[in-house]
Length: 177
Length: 102
Image 1 (cartoon, chains in turn yellow, brown):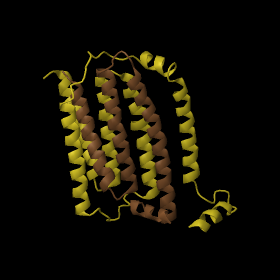
Image 2 (cartoon, rainbow over the protein chains, first blue to last red):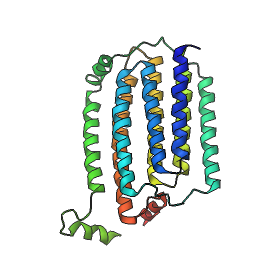
Image 3 (cartoon, chains in turn yellow, blue):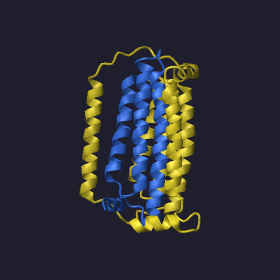
């Protein structure tokens, strides 16, 4: 076993263990923190693939911003709003069967696929940027627009209804509910 | 030597665990985080295919970057919906969304 493969297994183990912690932890804070471990392990896997840019983006976007967002949302909604509510055992078993059979299906498909694999080489940031700012420049701009619209929408959705104090918006929302 | 299948099986495992989380969680926040886990598994898949199958073009890596943008937008919106849901209903349970049927 080469050193590379050893580290792959270490990171894969951390990723899967963190993912299981996400779905299994009783406390939501614990679930969020084990999801953070998964994100870090995936960033390490991107590094193993030789794409440093993706590893950095994974750390910034997922490891940094999203984890902070999750913790903020937890602060707003209370740390454990499960409140003793658990999904019934039957539904959990059904979900486990669906997920396990889906995994087996995918693994069997991968095992019999026979990809045309080329020798991998490290991908520079320049190679990504060349495509992003030439062939994909229009999707790039649209992605920026979509992100802006989504964040404005998030602010509108999440703010207090009566933020101006004149009761107009609260009346409107209250009338529907 | 790490092969393409190593990454694919790992991504499939992460995807399946995320699927389990989406299907069985009562808590809305945990459902959203599980969706993020699924998107992350897809990212691993895309990057692995890009690096192993078409290493001369960085197209797959670009897809990953776009996926991250979309995931961030989706995540922000989902959290906003959860927070406003909590504000009106005072619960974080996903069952509260049944009220949206009207």
